[in-house]
Image 1 (tube, one colour):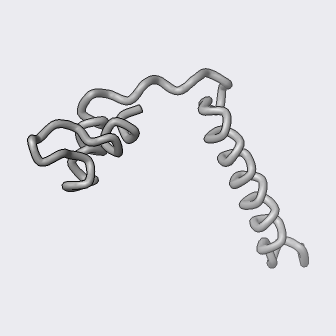
Image 2 (tube, rainbow, N blue to C red):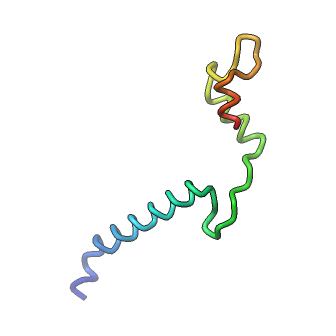
Length: 72
């Protein structure tokens, strides 16, 4: 009972484990079941480009090299 009053050590251990697992999943680009992530939807890619502002476009409106890198 005495240990149940202070859950901080257990929660810190869990938080460290969860962060390490999440970092691993991002590095591998896989979900929790080991399946590869699905490609980004066209709307998601368009949002990446829009939120990058002018840096993603040339003066003529075409994608800049940076914009192409964001899409890749």
